[in-house]
Length: 111
Image 1: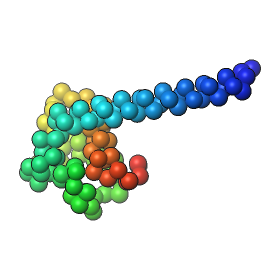
Image 2: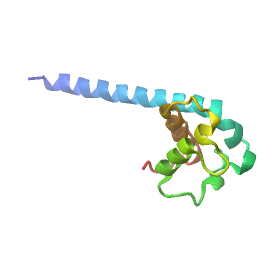
Image 3: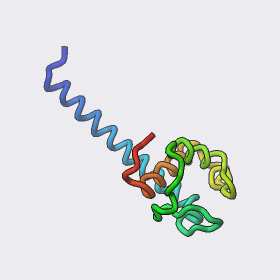
């Protein structure tokens, strides 16, 4: 049987580990976004919604993450699948999409 202090320490370490993993994923998402998505979503080329402009994201689906992930993976209107980065992993595409969500609408609840 674990001592209560040990259990508490384990819980704290698990929380810190999860926070570090989330920070790593956010950084990986930022890097993937900048490498592939930013060329259109920072400028609005081809009518891409600009990530830093919340008004560009108004009226989007309430199924925000699920729809954005699908569009990022498969393409949408003039955006090619995976933003044209054919070798991008599903992980990188979803991390970039998560980064876009957090940047565009930081108060939007996660799906």
